[in-house]
Length: 310
Image (tube, rainbow, N blue to C red):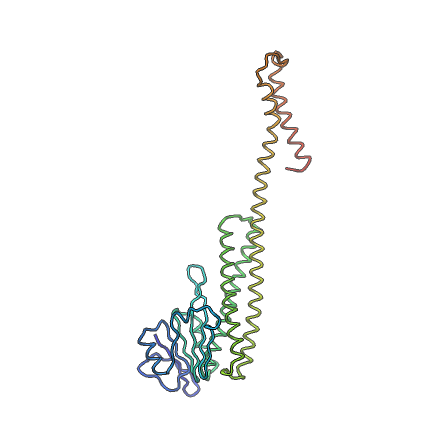
């Protein structure tokens, strides 16, 4: 699918007709394009779109490519799937005064970008690209804020309810993975913005906006580090509570075992098959043995209590 934005009388118009492209285009958006659509764009604007392999490259050199009159940028956008965040490649090509974007998924970022470039009256493809990037950074901030709220709920639940279920540990691990994915995604944007500052393709009038985005990214990285530290603390707290619970259980079994050791010793002594044992002929021998067992058990229990081991 192809959508494009034109600048007509200082107004942004969004169109979908692809029979021909007007000369005042500032943005072409390719969403899951067909081979025919890609060929049309390449032929009309004399560009070479990124292949699937090029878009999925992880090397830094493949993320930002600049030639004399063209800049190619590959970014990963986080896509939520089954409660997890998955990186999906989104490509940008800046040439002359227009921008070409290529993506496979439907992102709210692009819908918001349409409204924003209309309100700020974007003049060219560079303005469109920087506004998309700014919206995406705001989206990352919302993701971090949402995870922070979830971490706070886990922390309160762990302290209040002493919840030591396996699902809680898995949830903490899942948030750690999400935080790592978000951090990697933000670092990638930081590198792109640093490369843009060094580029002569982007006018100096855009540098102030770029510096603001870099500052926002720096604060987001600090926040992700803080969240990761909180998750590690929660994980260690969870494991510590589990150890304490296990120690408590082992302690109970140990106490029970020790309490029954004296009665067991007495029963063992009078269970020996010796012919001459004084208490065997005593009328009160049996009650005396039972009494000794009870007294020894109670005495051991009182000893543990006096030492505050129970």
